[in-house]
Image 1 (cartoon, rainbow, N blue to C red):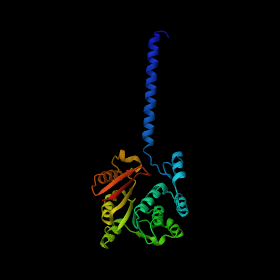
Image 2 (cartoon, rainbow, N blue to C red):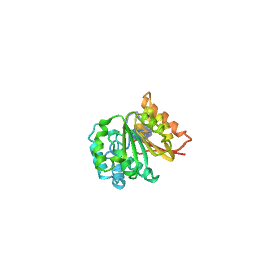
Image 3 (tube, rainbow, N blue to C red):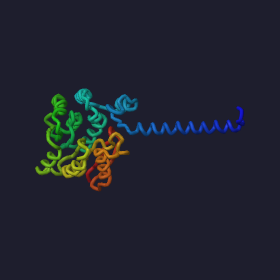
Image 4 (cartoon, rainbow, N blue to C red):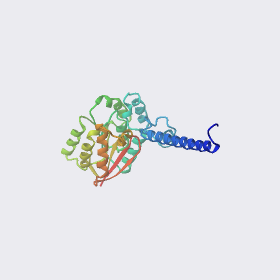
Length: 258
């Protein structure tokens, strides 16, 4: 203790304690912030998470063929693109709530959500399913047939904008009840505008990936992320709709046409 008084040592110890505590709290805060930037999909960032497991065990009511398609899709290297089952169920419940009959899906992938929506609409309902990659869609098509709903699905393998234009030219404006957008992010605004014309008053447009794995907080120069940020701002300011952005999956915005 040579050269240091007892009081000086106590003061130094106290200072070190404060510094350690502050560092611990700061580190914990940074950790919490970093973890909050991950998607909370049941098959993605939250896979195996005890809280997500609880959510699924106490809320998911998955059709047996849907479960089979989900398990098959998870075998694909691109399975992160699949809509989370808990999000698909939420949208199916919204479809039933507004008694939707005519639905548009932009971005099919293997067709898990396509099947979810086809099961939710009535026997004479229709899902216009838009994609440009038939290879992925072929994974899901046998499951659509097995579930007995393939007659409800009108698959369009071409750019979605072309399909939307064709529907408008055919006089289908204001005739759709529900739209799900989950495709190329730089065209979100284009799809949204066309779908606003196609959907009826009181209809819902659901837009996926609006949080983009948290990158919307720091978009940098990435074109896709910047497109999502700009699109989110657009919908927020759009007086033609009521809207809610919810933290399910990778974030989904629900726009209710006024």
